[in-house]
Amino acid sequence: MQQVKIDHIIGSRRFSNYWWATIIFFGSLGFFLAGLSSYLDKQLLPFSNTHDIIFLPQGIIMTFYGTLGMIISVFLWYTIILNVGSGYNKFDKDKGIVTIFRLGFPGPNRILKLTYYTKDIHSIKININDGLSPKREICLKTKDKRQIPITKVGQPISFHELELQASNLAKFLGVMIEGLDG
Image (cartoon, rainbow, N blue to C red):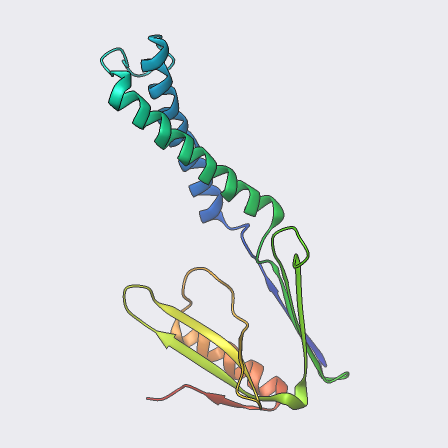
Protein backbone atom coordinates (compact mmCIF):
# COMPACT_ATOMS: atom_id res chain seq x y z
CA MET A 1 0.00 0.00 0.00
CA GLN A 2 1.24 3.47 -0.90
CA GLN A 3 2.37 5.37 2.20
CA VAL A 4 3.26 8.74 0.58
CA LYS A 5 0.91 10.84 -1.55
CA ILE A 6 2.19 13.95 -3.38
CA ASP A 7 -0.07 16.44 -5.17
CA HIS A 8 1.82 18.89 -7.39
CA ILE A 9 0.52 22.46 -7.66
CA ILE A 10 1.06 24.28 -10.98
CA GLY A 11 1.16 27.87 -9.72
CA SER A 12 1.30 30.81 -12.10
CA ARG A 13 2.65 28.93 -15.12
CA ARG A 14 -0.78 28.37 -16.63
CA PHE A 15 -1.88 29.03 -20.19
CA SER A 16 -4.26 31.80 -19.10
CA ASN A 17 -1.42 33.75 -17.46
CA TYR A 18 0.78 33.47 -20.55
CA TRP A 19 -2.18 34.55 -22.68
CA TRP A 20 -3.09 37.63 -20.60
CA ALA A 21 0.52 38.74 -20.06
CA THR A 22 1.06 38.67 -23.84
CA ILE A 23 -2.26 40.37 -24.75
CA ILE A 24 -1.78 43.11 -22.12
CA PHE A 25 1.79 43.74 -23.28
CA PHE A 26 0.94 44.16 -26.95
CA GLY A 27 -2.22 46.17 -26.22
CA SER A 28 -0.39 48.54 -23.89
CA LEU A 29 2.52 48.80 -26.34
CA GLY A 30 0.01 49.98 -28.95
CA PHE A 31 -1.38 52.59 -26.55
CA PHE A 32 2.10 53.75 -25.59
CA LEU A 33 3.28 54.05 -29.21
CA ALA A 34 0.09 55.89 -30.21
CA GLY A 35 0.62 58.43 -27.40
CA LEU A 36 4.31 58.77 -28.23
CA SER A 37 3.45 59.21 -31.92
CA SER A 38 1.18 62.14 -31.05
CA TYR A 39 3.98 63.75 -29.00
CA LEU A 40 6.74 63.25 -31.60
CA ASP A 41 4.35 63.89 -34.53
CA LYS A 42 5.79 60.78 -36.21
CA GLN A 43 4.03 57.63 -37.32
CA LEU A 44 5.33 54.88 -34.95
CA LEU A 45 2.44 52.46 -35.53
CA PRO A 46 2.53 51.00 -39.05
CA PHE A 47 -1.11 49.80 -39.02
CA SER A 48 -2.80 52.93 -37.68
CA ASN A 49 -2.96 56.64 -38.45
CA THR A 50 -2.07 58.59 -35.30
CA HIS A 51 -1.65 62.05 -36.88
CA ASP A 52 -5.17 63.05 -35.77
CA ILE A 53 -4.41 62.41 -32.08
CA ILE A 54 -3.63 65.59 -30.16
CA PHE A 55 -1.01 65.08 -27.44
CA LEU A 56 -2.95 67.02 -24.82
CA PRO A 57 -5.18 65.41 -23.54
CA GLN A 58 -5.55 62.26 -25.71
CA GLY A 59 -1.89 61.45 -26.35
CA ILE A 60 -0.79 61.88 -22.75
CA ILE A 61 -3.65 59.66 -21.51
CA MET A 62 -2.79 56.98 -24.08
CA THR A 63 0.88 57.15 -23.04
CA PHE A 64 -0.16 56.84 -19.38
CA TYR A 65 -2.42 53.84 -20.04
CA GLY A 66 0.25 52.23 -22.20
CA THR A 67 2.86 52.65 -19.48
CA LEU A 68 0.49 51.32 -16.83
CA GLY A 69 -0.38 48.31 -19.00
CA MET A 70 3.28 47.49 -19.62
CA ILE A 71 3.96 47.64 -15.86
CA ILE A 72 1.09 45.19 -15.27
CA SER A 73 2.40 42.97 -18.07
CA VAL A 74 5.92 42.96 -16.60
CA PHE A 75 4.43 42.02 -13.22
CA LEU A 76 2.53 39.10 -14.80
CA TRP A 77 5.66 37.88 -16.62
CA TYR A 78 7.59 38.22 -13.34
CA THR A 79 5.11 35.95 -11.54
CA ILE A 80 5.26 33.46 -14.44
CA ILE A 81 9.07 33.36 -14.46
CA LEU A 82 9.24 32.94 -10.67
CA ASN A 83 6.38 30.41 -10.80
CA VAL A 84 4.66 32.02 -7.82
CA GLY A 85 2.15 29.73 -6.13
CA SER A 86 3.70 26.49 -7.34
CA GLY A 87 4.62 23.71 -4.98
CA TYR A 88 3.23 20.49 -3.62
CA ASN A 89 1.15 18.87 -0.89
CA LYS A 90 2.89 15.84 0.58
CA PHE A 91 1.04 13.40 2.81
CA ASP A 92 3.48 10.94 4.44
CA LYS A 93 1.79 8.23 6.50
CA ASP A 94 5.13 6.60 7.45
CA LYS A 95 6.40 9.72 9.21
CA GLY A 96 2.93 10.97 10.14
CA ILE A 97 3.58 14.37 8.54
CA VAL A 98 1.65 16.56 6.10
CA THR A 99 3.81 19.10 4.25
CA ILE A 100 2.41 22.03 2.28
CA PHE A 101 5.08 23.74 0.17
CA ARG A 102 4.59 26.86 -2.01
CA LEU A 103 6.86 29.36 -3.76
CA GLY A 104 6.22 33.09 -3.36
CA PHE A 105 7.92 36.31 -4.40
CA PRO A 106 11.63 36.84 -3.63
CA GLY A 107 12.41 37.92 -0.11
CA PRO A 108 12.54 36.40 3.33
CA ASN A 109 9.20 34.64 2.82
CA ARG A 110 9.87 33.25 -0.68
CA ILE A 111 9.38 29.69 0.48
CA LEU A 112 6.27 28.75 2.42
CA LYS A 113 6.62 25.36 4.03
CA LEU A 114 3.99 24.26 6.51
CA THR A 115 4.20 20.93 8.29
CA TYR A 116 1.54 19.29 10.40
CA TYR A 117 1.31 15.95 12.12
CA THR A 118 -1.36 13.70 10.67
CA LYS A 119 -2.63 13.07 14.20
CA ASP A 120 -3.49 16.82 14.38
CA ILE A 121 -5.71 16.66 11.27
CA HIS A 122 -9.34 16.48 12.35
CA SER A 123 -11.02 16.29 8.95
CA ILE A 124 -11.04 17.27 5.29
CA LYS A 125 -13.40 20.20 4.74
CA ILE A 126 -14.98 21.17 1.44
CA ASN A 127 -15.87 24.85 0.99
CA ILE A 128 -18.18 25.74 -1.90
CA ASN A 129 -19.25 29.31 -2.70
CA ASP A 130 -21.12 29.59 -6.00
CA GLY A 131 -22.13 32.89 -7.54
CA LEU A 132 -20.33 35.73 -9.26
CA SER A 133 -16.92 34.67 -7.95
CA PRO A 134 -17.21 30.91 -7.42
CA LYS A 135 -14.82 29.21 -5.04
CA ARG A 136 -14.48 25.48 -4.51
CA GLU A 137 -11.69 24.36 -2.26
CA ILE A 138 -10.52 21.51 -0.10
CA CYS A 139 -9.09 22.39 3.30
CA LEU A 140 -7.31 20.44 5.98
CA LYS A 141 -9.13 21.15 9.22
CA THR A 142 -6.91 20.76 12.26
CA LYS A 143 -8.08 19.83 15.74
CA ASP A 144 -7.57 23.45 16.85
CA LYS A 145 -10.16 24.52 14.18
CA ARG A 146 -7.70 25.99 11.63
CA GLN A 147 -8.51 25.47 7.96
CA ILE A 148 -5.55 25.18 5.58
CA PRO A 149 -6.52 25.33 1.87
CA ILE A 150 -4.74 22.72 -0.22
CA THR A 151 -6.41 22.99 -3.64
CA LYS A 152 -4.96 24.57 -6.74
CA VAL A 153 -5.81 28.15 -7.64
CA GLY A 154 -7.53 28.71 -10.97
CA GLN A 155 -10.73 27.57 -12.58
CA PRO A 156 -13.17 25.98 -10.16
CA ILE A 157 -13.16 22.22 -10.51
CA SER A 158 -16.39 20.28 -10.91
CA PHE A 159 -18.25 19.22 -7.81
CA HIS A 160 -17.74 15.56 -8.71
CA GLU A 161 -13.96 16.01 -9.07
CA LEU A 162 -13.81 18.01 -5.81
CA GLU A 163 -15.76 15.32 -3.98
CA LEU A 164 -13.55 12.58 -5.43
CA GLN A 165 -10.30 14.33 -4.45
CA ALA A 166 -11.58 15.04 -0.93
CA SER A 167 -12.83 11.50 -0.38
CA ASN A 168 -9.56 9.97 -1.65
CA LEU A 169 -7.54 12.24 0.64
CA ALA A 170 -9.81 11.59 3.63
CA LYS A 171 -9.55 7.85 3.02
CA PHE A 172 -5.76 8.08 2.69
CA LEU A 173 -5.40 10.06 5.94
CA GLY A 174 -8.12 8.12 7.78
CA VAL A 175 -10.23 11.18 8.66
CA MET A 176 -13.81 12.26 7.95
CA ILE A 177 -15.11 14.74 5.38
CA GLU A 178 -17.02 17.91 6.31
CA GLY A 179 -19.07 20.22 4.12
CA LEU A 180 -20.96 17.75 1.94
CA ASP A 181 -24.38 18.86 3.13
CA GLY A 182 -27.15 18.07 0.76
